[in-house]
Image (cartoon, rainbow, N blue to C red; front, top):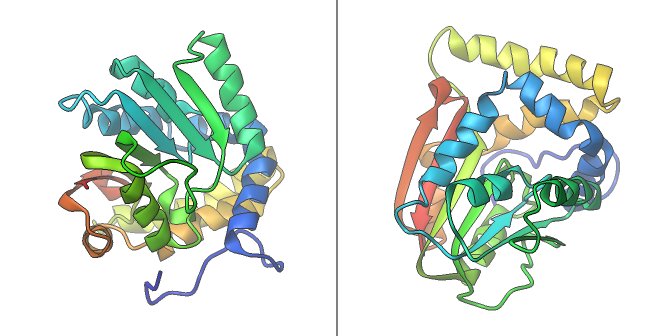
Length: 245
């Protein structure tokens, strides 16, 4: 995908973005959920609830959660909706391991099944899923267009895609406070807890590089999604994008 900005990778070392993202999430997996709560002041839970609420009207029965991580979105889907099956897919085996423990604790297996897999090469047949969700994952795709095309391929006709992703606030002085926090405070907290400050530096850099807002709507349009919409949350820190096949 070309956004006019250089590719952002978690580490400065050799290797493609996909392998580095997998390495990064394996590194921070034990701290991921706690840091999400602390760094977002718990607001990330509200964002997920609002994103999944977009699916209520359709009541999809077979749902794919791409970049499922520790399965927070899959668990929220199970809580809000009444699907027959939720499949979560992620390239980080350590994140999936934590997700499986959370699912087992809530006794939600086999409703929720987690699989190791690549979002840009989804191991599913065409027209399989009623809905696909991606929370804080699309900016980590090595090739955004390819990942979106794969999502569209596995969606059924008129199936819904819901994307939750960080975006860049534009309102003064919130924009400046947000940038200072993400660029300076967040990596410091990450270094003190997860011992991988580069992972949280990458968070800031990847948000800056991601084509958010109307730019992402254009990317969805280019990849043949229809009924596209964009809803900023919390003064633009985060956004919900919705589209259909």
